[in-house]
Length: 416
Image (cartoon, rainbow, N blue to C red; front, side, top):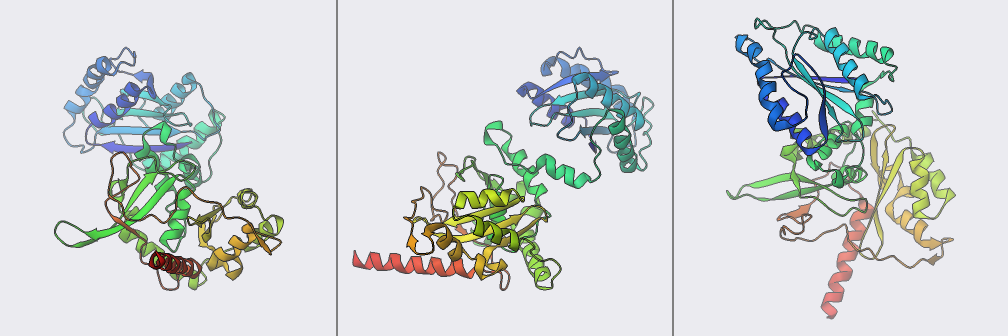
């Protein structure tokens, strides 16, 4: 079980957040302690009584800067507790942390597949004195381990891995709250190693997120670089309005990502990490000439293969994501035998001789400049470009094919 604790200057924010979930029908109050509420889950009628319950504690406080307390308790995905067990779990946790006599509410959240609870309380007592929170993180970890045993929950030895397991999954537009879903996924892939923006984009595409690098000039004439993120469906079609990277924090913005890619490129050259998936990819190549079967075979080893194709169905890019080691590689980085051209021949030539007819794609991954259309949230007002790549971090096969395609188009235009 993972516990997340935050201290807030105001209680209004956490209570409003949870009651908005109640209003939307994705949360409900399952228990309270020392609260003047009838627990009827009607946000309008419950809110004044709840705030009144905390008023004496907040009024008595004079020194504590952040008297509000907001806690979420998240059992493992495979743990299944009833409402009564969740309420008891919250009570035992609050007692172990020294908040057992405080007023608090327990909200059951069901807005994602994993049921979890939020607890809203105050960390000052009736006299306004702050309740001791020294070594809070360590005590919380110990409380979670004890409660895992008490309630027969899965014991989590690696909190980071469990957090990734909770949030590292495809964005589902139909479930709503797309911004939160995208944010959770971006945080969960933060420790993957990638060296180019193409590798980063391929990684996010596995989780139904499209990333685009935009650059241009602002109103003041100054050049700018940025990244926007959008949710997609399983076929890669954009289904949401774009979100600016600033909404998710600097780590997923242009500057920080560019620095990270250069650092990863340097570490790869220095041998601080090295790809260990060549033999698995090679084995899958020998096992089948069918692209779908090839992708499925690698998935059994927790490896994703992402291929980029043009309008004519030609493969011009291949990227492999090793989720076990959290590493992303363009095929050309792994070796010439894993370049895009090799895979195009593998999947489109029978016995290496007779080419298969190319499949037309409804949507090219190389999009031209277009203006923003409110009815087409996938469009935007900026030109689309890749981030500048580190030295030797380019996919030469991809670039050569794109140059060849441009030359052919120019020839056709001259004939016309």
